[in-house]
Figure (cartoon, rainbow, N blue to C red):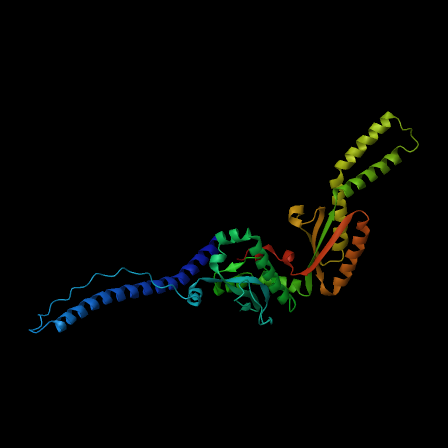
Length: 355
């Protein structure tokens, strides 16, 4: 979050908290006054009761009331749950941006299930938003929550469901998980500030979706291919030569070098797959390779590519993937296709930083 956005969020939070603080102070003041009045009234009533009950004679001359001891101050009763929620500072969670007037399902739940997704519109653009407590999405809380796997999975699933619901109706510029603004004014300012980039993205993404492709191979498969190539090269270089001690030593050395060259083969295969798919895509990008702990796959990841595909070309793209998968399966390579997705990877970085 940029410094100016943090300052704005703090200012907005202070304004909203002030309402709650005043309410609590008012309740405490009323409790104190009630206790003070109760003590004074009790003393006065006792005095009159004593005079009324005295046997015969004139009533004692009126004395100045002596206030009784002030009862111990008690804390103001807690606000009811609904009232507490009303006074809690809330922000606007932004899922993505669509064109103004987009029709959403009326029961589309947000990150917080009690809050429905709605639109905040500005100059023909609209942000998909729902209300969230700012306390759950400040920098400290968000860092802690991102380490909570159950919380992260739940929020990521809801974030994706909202985008997919919108994507079914129109083009969507997706924003990152956890993009929160202090209020509607800040969301509107973002739409105005990023208007050109957002409009360009909506036009570029119209009728297109993102597809992902990952390719995996066991290291043994790469080593087998490296040895196969080394032996073939050795056979070509020594065709007709006698197999003496020098020849065998040379061969073993070449095989060791081949094993060390598996990374070159992995790069070659990855480039071949990516190049052939990029040829049938509108845009193509390479993402960083993932370790098995993150990818959930035991094999070595060769490729982590994403492809922007026109809706009418999706069938041809899937066919190209199928042909590649069949050919590389013989080399021990597994090809995994996912999608269609909102085009996260094809949105300019300036929009991602628009919190």
